[in-house]
Length: 116
Image 1: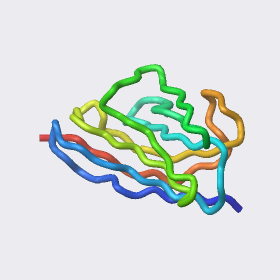
Image 2 (image 1 turned 90 degrees about the vertical axis):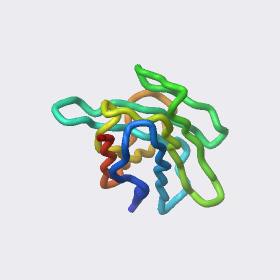
Image 3 (image 1 turned 180 degrees about the horizontal axis):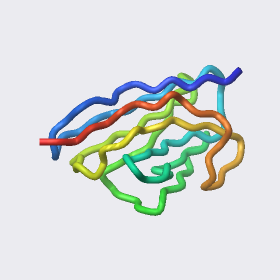
């Protein structure tokens, strides 16, 4: 059974940075970060395949950078200049198809709260 475990969430003030990490139990071709803010639908932040190609969500920003370490079976999301509207539960996602839709594997989610 594929497992994804996120870490790195927390409460920060506007303008601060966070790094989210996700480790997979197996190598996964496509790994991604989605987020779900209160009262909103879950949305794609970014996806990355094992060659480093990236698909961005509908609201791309250079404040968020996705990366991965294939040898460690990990994907990261480096978030900088965080804003209150970035507050959400961030989910790690994995799958075998490099499309915008989510793959079948989900982590439990990690809360990111940006507030002064």
